[in-house]
Image (cartoon, rainbow, N blue to C red):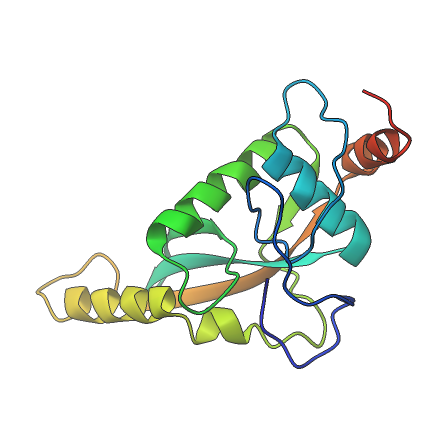
Amino acid sequence: MHQHDEYCGCDHGRHHHQGEHCHCGHEHAAMPVREGISPVQVDILLALRQRHCLPVASFALLKKGDEDRYMVALAPVYLATTEDTMEQVKDLGKVLSELENMDLIFLDYDIPIANYAYAEYKNSALYAYFVQTTEEAARRPNPAFDTPDLELGSITLTEKGENWVDEMLKGGK
């Protein structure tokens, strides 16, 4: 799921999911799926229950000398590897946003996971491309933004999300 040397609560290596892959890094037993929630979303919720949090990032743009100029270019960004593609990130970002809109997870770009290096984010091909395109744009006359910003954060279950997982684990729908 994510490459790391630090302990982040993950006691498992990479596993394959049956059917869709949520990039959570674990194989999950078939769970009853509640109406309105996909198997991928269930996998994410189960991974969050097991790990308590997962890393997330936001690619933002800033303007030097203008602290009010700020724009999110891509969020939420969840990377399983440094080679994840834009399409993979956007697809999983949509799933995460849906879970957030259902009030099952909380995406926080201000609270990074303690003792987690976020190496897959800092060293990703996607972030390198973002930095490169921002630098190219900054060389043009009067750019709106000239500085890339990698905001590191965390994903956690909300109270409602914890309750949903409890119900799923008990076999409820």
